[in-house]
Image 1 (cartoon, protein in one colour):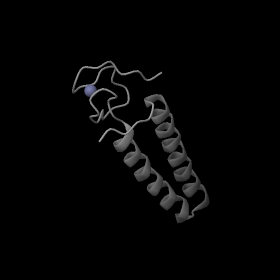
Image 2: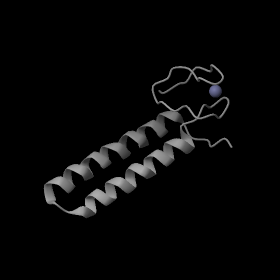
Image 3: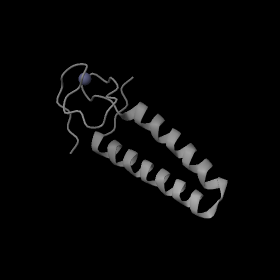
Image 4: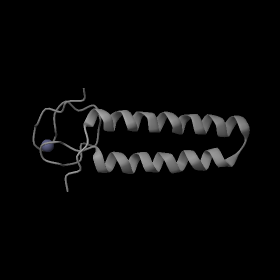
Length: 82
Ligand SMILES: [Zn+2]
């Protein structure tokens, strides 16, 4: 399985996802509404699943695990994040 999506776009979506998760946690604490906490947890899970599907080496298609690696730890292919 080799999902195709540019890694810079994947990384941006993941960053936005986690920013929104943080906002939901802050909103939940500020408003005392559990709803925001549930949205935050759901979104965090969705973001991690998204990263699990698309955070992959363009060369060998294996999971990169971290979004900061310069090289694929499976095949050694340089990873472009720009
Ligand atoms: Zn690779």
